Length: 271
Length: 130
Image 1 (cartoon, one colour):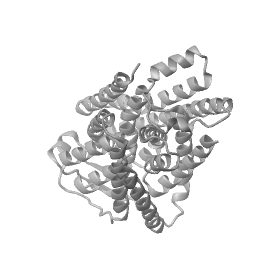
Image 2 (cartoon, helix red, strand yellow; image 1 turned 90 degrees about the horizontal axis):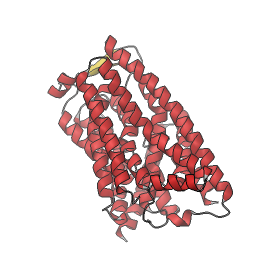
Image 3 (tube, chains in turn red, cyan; image 1 turned 90 degrees about the vertical axis):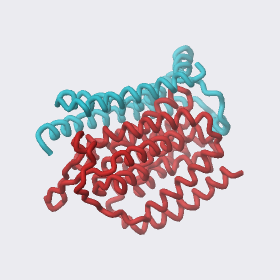
Image 4 (cartoon, rainbow over the protein chains, first blue to last red; image 1 turned 120 degrees about the horizontal axis):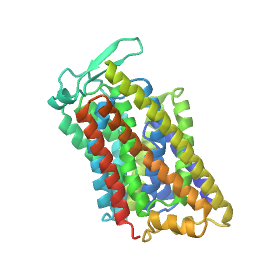
């Protein structure tokens, strides 16, 4: 039966998403729409459910090493949750073809960002908002050294978070790529802190639109159950295997695959 | 990290462990509910989802599952509802923790995010046909 096959496909999507650090959503939506021919609105809703599941399950591991800046995460959730609400509201008015185009472009953008060399920043300038809310922080390196960092350009970061939330609700993705971009490039946070804080925030962003889609009736248990279960299993094993893989080579290989999928999504949007 | 921040961090870690248990419970409900309904079907129903249909709201689906005693659907819907509520509960508890540590501005920000999350759920309820 197709549903059983869908479960195994979701395991694979979760596994790949975890290895690539992109999450399962960016893989499962194209798979559901291009191979299973599921309507993109149902695919997006099912994907968001799986994002909530993986992110909530992994939240403890993001907090364990003290890299997550909890105060900053709470503050930036204002942007992502507001964006997700707007994304949900406009999703009813956006034609499936536009969603395919948007998804294709987002996929291409994620592929390009995966190849970029992330520059590590330790900012010494604190934005006034960061000063007042004490959003700056410290973390410990593997060698025991304590690193202190400050937070710059918070309004710009908040704006990018808003866009990330909107795209998350529209496309059924975690938007981790955009969140990391906001924290790395705009707010000048250290790489480790921005990755951990972004991962921690993904579940809250996704739950805003996942809850809305669920109550509206767009989450179909026949699709969402195998997808969520598969992605939970796949990402669990992906996280275990990730440490032992030569990540750069794998990323380069998958950028090619992401590019092919993104072109297919764009073509479907243009037809 | 000072003492107050450390205590918030530790409490948040505890909350996250509770969330993980919540994911396991909802995962079990999803799994049992899905397999239950799958075992009652002879053919795939994936074709039904090729085009977007007028949605049947969560409330209506739940109500009709109760009425028809569709245990599989009831379990799956309960699992989905628990799952989407987990981050909302986390945000609420984070707000309480900030209040407890007298970090009033961050506490109110958390409560704002919590209300926004509830608001988004309400919008879904409003947009549903039921």
